[in-house]
Length: 331
Image 1 (cartoon, rainbow, N blue to C red):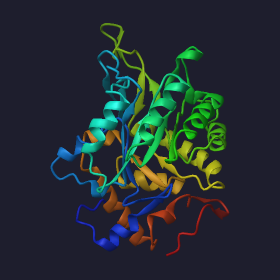
Image 2: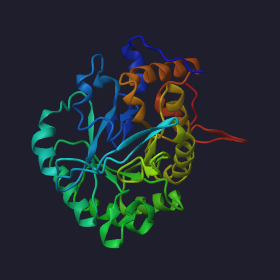
Image 3: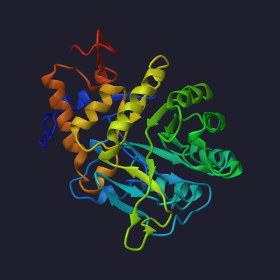
Image 4: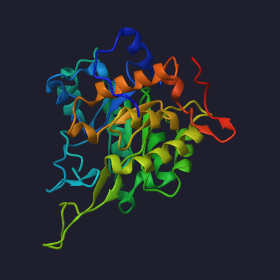
């Protein structure tokens, strides 16, 4: 069991937590995930919360035009997690760039835009909109349905995924992070195609698809019928997907944001050892918005006990029979 320290970390301890992600220096390996912290301003209002505890914040999914999202109900609690079907409610890229980004303090942490769309052209339009902005990196949410292809999600088809990445790559020089879906035949093949198309990093994984039913009414509990499953229940799946994608990424030096059910320092450490460079925290923030400081404390405690100099040395350090994969973790 890894201790979750709540005491203030020293500067030396914080130095252990620093990582490089796509050339961006992050003060912590923790990333607040898109959709869980709005456009970055919500959690600054929580007493005791500090952006110093996180390396980056992923903003809410943004489309070209404003969207109202799906009809209610849009969130439903499930065993060890939750279902959500928000439907990309957002004010549109122009509003985000002109009115929301100027209110964010870019000296406190890094900010990552999340680009969504229903066509390749929409992805390009939104990416171009964020290119001329102070945003630090751009995450491509390829789990959206392609309206021109009968509603098939971009992220479930390697050809479609590569088309989106390639098109977005042409209109920005900012780091591109491709958010991979677990709802596909081969996540490794998709990763290979996205690397060839120009992605700089991956976020692994997006939510799994699921549903819930009101047995008395015999009706779906979500207005959209289906939604994304997140939370601790999906962690074993996410860990495996991170490991699979890491096998493709490590030869190219492509970093991964490992995400899916992180609720403790133990969870974060598992993702790092599996191959993640940074770790996303999302659903757990709804019931513990100050969780990140506890995770950072637990990671530092682990590094000290195992005589590991920095958190970066844990990435891909999973020990397999007869070998140690990744870098040596000796101090």
